[in-house]
Image 1 (spheres, rainbow, N blue to C red):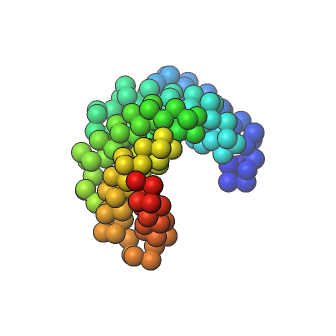
Image 2: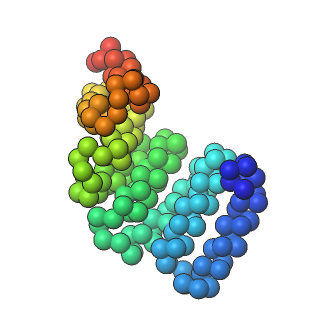
Length: 172
């Protein structure tokens, strides 16, 4: 239903799934976190960012309880919360969460992994939004270096980040 943009129906099914999962596993099992993430995505697609943040935080709370500090689900949750904080223009908080995500990615993934470049670009975007162009430039450059290593030079992500870097160079 999410794919068909039938958000109310999607939420209805996720709420039923959540109920079943709570009955089977209790209130803080990682399976519930997956359901909360799905519910957050429904709200995000509707641009209901406060509700999105509420569900992402529920998932994050579960992942923090059940995972060590170097878990991919925890990193993804920090990233999700950070991106929604950015939508809410809470840039410092967004940076805090996205930096936590980056730290985990760097500790568990190869240094030239796409999730690391994505995290670097997310952080760069936040600095750009804050008009801290020097910091934005630094993080875009790091992301671009990884993109150049893992993607062809004609890939849209490589071309886009190159364009952004040129735009920033004109500002600093």
